[in-house]
Amino acid sequence: MSEKGIDYLRNKLNAHKIRVDMRYKQYAMQHTEQMVGITIPPEIRRRYRSVIGWCAKGVDSLADRLVFREFENDDFEVNEIFKVNNPDVFFDSVVLSALIASCSFVYISKGVDDEPRLQVVGAGDATGVIDPITGLLTEGYAVLERDENGVATLEAHFLPGQTNYYYKDKNIEDISFSHNFPHPLLVPVIHRPDEARPFGRSRISRAGMYFQRYAKRTLERADITAEFYSFPQKYVTGLSNDAEPMESWKATVSSMLQFTKDDDGDKPILGQFTTSSMSPFTEQLRTAAAGFAGEMGLTLDDLGFVSDNPSSVEAIKASHENLRLAGRKAQRSLGSGLLNVAYIAACLRDDFPYTRSQFINTTPMWEPLFEADANTLTLVGDGVIKINQAIPGYIDGKAIRNLTGLKGANANG
Image (spheres, rainbow, N blue to C red):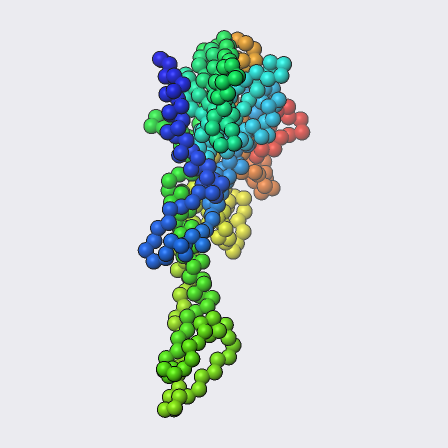
């Protein structure tokens, strides 16, 4: 495959950065929606800007359940590489970034004692040309440092066997780093890739953003309506033309008003306009929540609409079936990317061009998506006894750990 060049990759990153930055703003609850509507003036709507964290909830509800355990059948001791690279932060950062922006990148370099150093680079700062067979890059580009204005001060162009570094400061000489295996030192970790979208799909979908935007508009309208609901408009008819004008604020908050008859003996009539009900907004907000929950595989309880009866763990699992399936899919796709990271890091550590096929037996292992409670442990225990009675030794401690997440006292893994 011919080399695309750093200019091509710069333009590719700029084309996708807007989309990535917008989803990060959605996650951080900093995205400002375009004001729409035909009844509320824009200057009034600006005063009642609403903020909802449903997109962040949709991402975190899955990211918090994706807990990487280790690599099984670790013939090349890649677990040691991750142990010295702050794994508690590294894996969570990779998973969260991939769920928000559809993919994340891991930049691999040599650190202290020539040990591989792993650095997570977001999709807004890296891109590349992907090999659809292996999921590795054939050529990559990343912005490794930016100044306070967001301008790139250090760029890296990743090629098979070589990495070129470019500094914005012309007083610093550009450098190159060579290695002896035919893959770049930038590895993508992709969430839900397919043929049409090789760099995956974001957890923050267009439908999810629509339902959140719909809910924000509903809250803004409800907030403005609440002003009239709190202080309903009143009116007086039949006042004499000679009567003194009434101060509107006094008429609103005063506990006692006095009106006298005029010379003809007529008296004014007091009235109050019917106040708007808040119920339609509650129903609208619940409709938006139901749509968002269906899109993300959540329940209304997850979005704050608490039900009267608390659910058991089994009931929670049943109601989160779509979330469980999304988690399984994410484990498969992200696990493949993490295995590629382990492969490239092992090649760099050992200074040896291993082949990708040598790592086919190394398997990424994840903790169960749902933690087991006492009832689940009882059911699993009864099932294991019956299965092992029928087929002795069919289920061992490793299988039970994969089911429940519990590590036995004598387990080595």
